[in-house]
Image 1 (cartoon, rainbow, N blue to C red):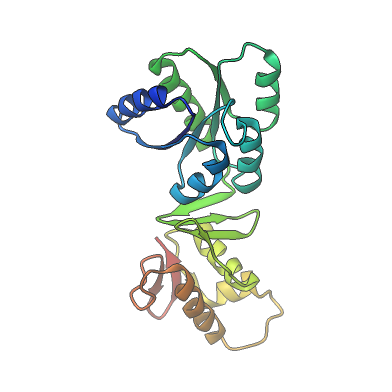
Image 2: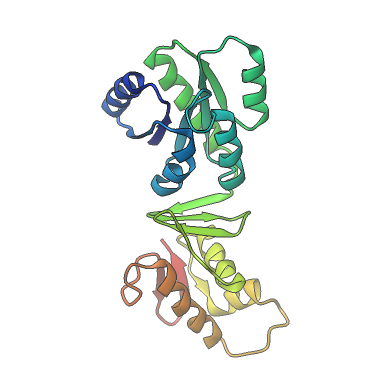
Length: 222
């Protein structure tokens, strides 16, 4: 699992990073609340472990920003404070769990697994494919942390293919779902749009790896 640790305690972060990586996780770290959202967008983690007290921007503010941009990204809040208000407020803002310092790595790993199980059973509003992150609710797309400028129809087609990964969608199905039953036109409109879309989301549009062609049938995402 790709984890992002956001905490200004460098000693804690180094220890957690070493131990969590030994458990098989891929761990990135950020020490400043003001940079947290940028780092999260750039690295596309599967889960964020976020401290309440941070320089630059506090953890609860960062949590609000995460929920606005990435509504389904699991977040575990950390704090050394004893006041229940931080716990309540953190969970009301959309934190998935809460852990008070000091804690053991075993306890943190148990929370990570529990949150991951809950997240896995919930319908996703986001899809990650390699360096591509698609927010299906917000209708926004990022590639390597940079937001792409897709037309509404380009987004509709991309979202359709991602929702049906592994399933070949015929041109007629794409026309029906993305243009509507009353669309009158040539199915080559789909080919033209797919070509434009590949220019934006593929490393090499002539040799696509995300949006693939089933010759004589249609298109699909693996």
